Image (cartoon, rainbow, N blue to C red; front, side, top):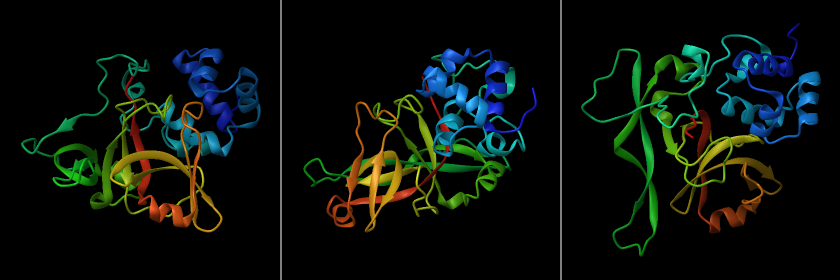
Length: 244
């Protein structure tokens, strides 16, 4: 098969991993006919992030065929057979203050919701002083992320399924807060950590979109609404580790 576009590369990956077309379409959340259209003409730009996160693919490889197909941490990279659906699969690890770093690694802290002592249940988003994970410096460089601007966020709930199930982790570049339509971002919503795909709307507002749109419809906020609701963009998602 001559590889010419992203649809060809997705078809190649499905063949190599033994994923039937029907299962592939169901995983992405599209019809078999739409998948055939992708195979024929390429993956729509708005769906590239979904496909790369769901199948642990490097986006640059998927779009342009350059580099390696597997995203850092991919369970496919070692064996060619994914164990991502196995309950014991651990593509990333959490470390404490006692674990030494390798020379080519840095610690990236998690953000967490912290309840204020006199806030009547109100929370604020702060970095954790204990929970962190290791990242290779090369991985951060490849994504143009400065080590001191990287944080991690744990997905809570089912709003980003099937791409990011409850308990999954995303890496966030806090140096990238300017919204690009269709990209995934972490936001601080009045002390609640949320991860959504964002779209700009006229007047400085934002549309927040979940992958699970059936149960979680779009939310739209004008610039005034954003201020009133205390919504701020923490940063752009550059990495994910999905757990099933």
